Length: 325
Image 1 (spheres, one colour):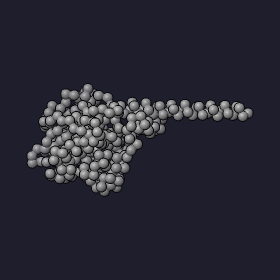
Image 2 (spheres, rainbow, N blue to C red):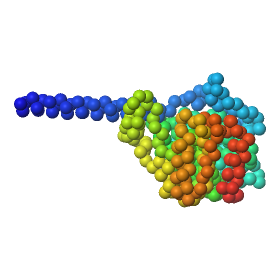
Image 3 (cartoon, helix red, strand yellow):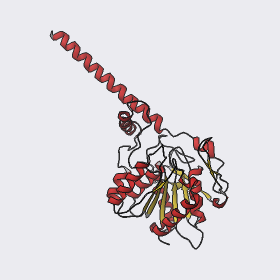
Image 4 (cartoon, rainbow, N blue to C red):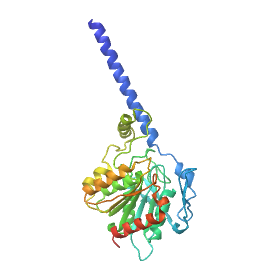
């Protein structure tokens, strides 16, 4: 009796160990596949620059196009250091149009880069309004250095955003004159940057998330695999994926700084509820935010579907939120 019981217990332990190992392995595979940064942006948009870009977003047959001619601008190619030692970032710099002195750092999302139309169009809108524009390639994207080749959901990339902030400060731009414009998970990086740099003045957030976005793992285990994938990403890649969420940053460290939230109600990548939650958290942090919910807009499509209104709102927000240097 005892012998058969011991054997059954051993089999059970073996099953648990093997099953647990397989589960962790599946989480590791999910992390590696979902957060891997490929070169799709440069493959698709390497020829797009501030002076030449065309404003087309989406996939055939759902292309959305805006006349980019009024928004094209000249910019200087520069290389700037991240706050993470040893990482250099590719960037474009366009100085403010005198007498304007205020500057906005434009931050792209996962698998995008400064060559992407989703950030070139709003950057052009800002420069048309007179603002200086610094467009950066986050680590592992565009022409910037790579570390582990994976996107860290903004929990590491905020140091790249603040590398841009430090570069502008070194050029004499006052902190109160520097704003952030973040797109998709680039908005998450911008929120984290606000949390780590109390002198950063304001942020415009398009299609943001309030917490770590669930991984797109098919099947019934999605809800379980996502957090395991985050754990494995932290163990294998060293990225602090389980660190402070944008929602927590806003609740505890926003300190009343101006924030705008824009989200499309047809967003299938980051649901509009995420942006709404972030706006509520901003209220807890001392900033009343009424999110602009754009009817029929998908992920980061608002500037393409309502360009005139988008331009007006964004320029008005930064003119009200940033101080003239």
